[in-house]
Length: 277
Image (cartoon, rainbow, N blue to C red; front, side):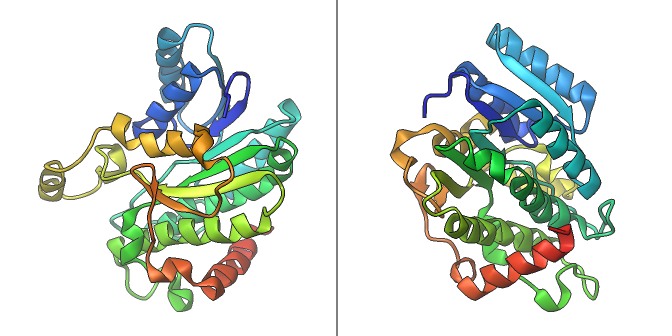
């Protein structure tokens, strides 16, 4: 996809994979709209991109993905300023080691990693369709293989497991991609998801130091971790591909749970209720 003057939105762009993705897309001529929670980090990123790509077009807009109200305000503000959105990259993610809640009182892994991109994407979907050909890219993880959608206790109120809660939220990313691709058939909008690799980012900041040190032996850099995201957002090789899961810029079969249509359907309905869509 030719990116010059194309409007591209990236969540979680102030660090890690998102930061490298933003820098790469700006260098290709994209107009970047970045939902930012921390304005200082946003300004630092903007300065860094402009130093690398003088004249890059970057707009920072406040958005807290832990708040449905903030997401709705952001989407409304975006649509008052732009009538096109060619690429949406749902990159932001967290991994909570303890059971914490979002501003809406929802378990944070599920709220930020799944419900936030679900709500944001759906609020912007008419604009994305009007921009076709357009692409949506969801950053998932191989950790989805540790997950199962626990419909009987989706917020882990009975017994909290950090790995299972995170894995469930990443499985939800893939199921969301699957269902959304079906809804977007014949619209000119594709949606794919990916595993970026085990990347050295602040995602693991809350992990015990001994685990971080062990994982550091096989972690890759954020620049390498961003490559599959950039590939799905820009490569002509996937312009007509939708609903796929990728790793190292190649299709990869996800877990059997991620392929279950009835689970994708049920999760979509539940997510609509949670977000008030």
